[in-house]
Amino acid sequence: MRYREFGRTGWKVSEVAFGAWQIGGDWGAVDDMRSVDTLLYAFGKGINFVDTAEVYGKGHSEEVIGRALRAWQGDKIYVATKVQPIQWPNANDDHPAMRGRYPDWYLRDSVEKSLKRLGVERLDMMQLHSWMGDGLYALDWLESLNRLRAEGKIDKIGVSLRDFRPDEGIDLARSGLVDAIQVVYNLFEQRPRHGLFAAGEPTSTAFIARVPLDSGALVGHWTADTYARWAPGSVPHTMFREGRFPDTLDRVKRLKKLCAPYYPTLAEAAIRYVLDSRQVSTLIPGMHTRAEVDMNLVYSDGQVFPAELLAQLGEHLWIRNYYQ
Image 1 (tube, rainbow, N blue to C red):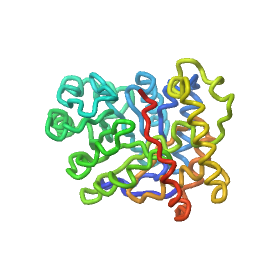
Image 2: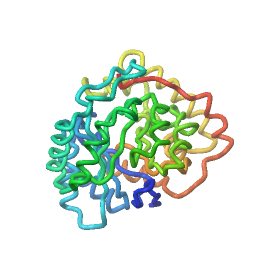
Image 3: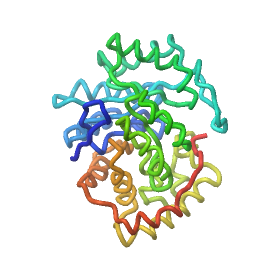
């Protein structure tokens, strides 16, 4: 396992971390004992950073992580959780208002609940689950989080950018107001590489790359029959509904053809593409089995992404909002 600086925090985190949305149950049925076993296995392999949120399984992901933390006897595990806004902004709104989305009483209540579910005395990092650009000027959210930090309830502060709007974080990264910014970054969503990451360098802002495998699409094992096997109402079944699945599959096939001369699997190309960005502190693929842990960790070896392949990826940039 290789480790990277987590911005200016002083943390050294595994460059491949544990994305814990799946173990909350929103992606399909889960076995909590297996989830705890997978977490402990990942910790034993060197993963020391876990990303979760109160909304993942309505707190269930946090509870399962709490069980694993109590069973773990090794080195420090950093857990970053998230608090959703009291009202989600409309995905089509280019300039949603930030003020009032995270009122003080609400943040305090959310922090206390996350502390209880995780079974810890202080949250390593609390992230706002949705960032809106005018939060740079409507600073009620930051005042509340800083008070909670002064009281010892949280350590670091982060935000998670909206799903297809990485450039909304550029001014925030330049400002250095938060310790970390989480953003969608993968073979389809390439824009952070060309703007956001550079903006955060002067302030040593940490970057967390989420959905590096595009919610499973970039693993490369989908077939025309895959969608029918997903449970109705699950995250993938909803996300790739109607014409979204065949469109995604077609784009994945084209990427596989492009990457085949360089990598045996699309998953390897996808993970190595994200790891190639030195500004990324860690990436958080979802994992819920030991095999998935092993599949992701094997790429933590410092290999350089081929320049000739990188030069050809621009035509595969794909901007869309499937979380809506």
